Length: 234
View 1 (spheres, rainbow, N blue to C red):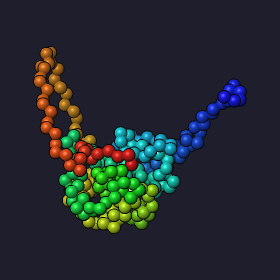
View 2: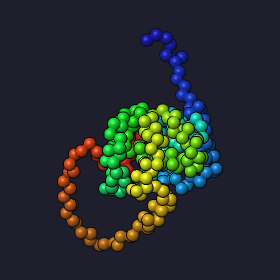
View 3: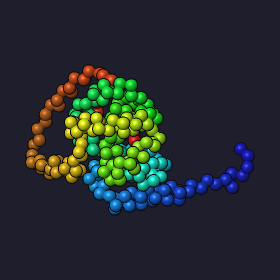
């Protein structure tokens, strides 16, 4: 090994990353001041991760890649919130997209199932037809259809999905309305429906019960329903 190792130094400079995080946080704060985003916020915990991936779960995480403009940041933020809406609408054994998943496949049998035209899998492509429709509809309510479409027409990925959502906006909207996914409930409705958790009465000698036998495995199919609307990396 050549050279004098005593003179070798590595300096980690996070100043640029911190500035980028602060820029995104400031843009999001400005958007929340000008628009009533609370009715679309199905999670109130947001993490900003410079140079990281944007994803919905387990914490809504915003990278800095999709924050070049306020309109792009707004649509990205709403996209991830729509994943949370489906998660809250579902339950431990219920995926709200499952009842009409086969109908989406029937309508779009040749949907691409990989990036950049589709999503990351067969299931995620069809799920994102729903998420992207909800995103465009919510963005339209806040900044108008023309600006919402402009953002949807210039994504780095999900290209076929966004084109299809815009081309078939009304038919897809009718399908989502028929299945109770639009109009969106207010996020507070989920909290009210949950109600206070009942307190358990103390017991001096709790009973030991035999654990229930696990249910038999469901038949395998290409569609693998996920409870609570699934999770997404974007």
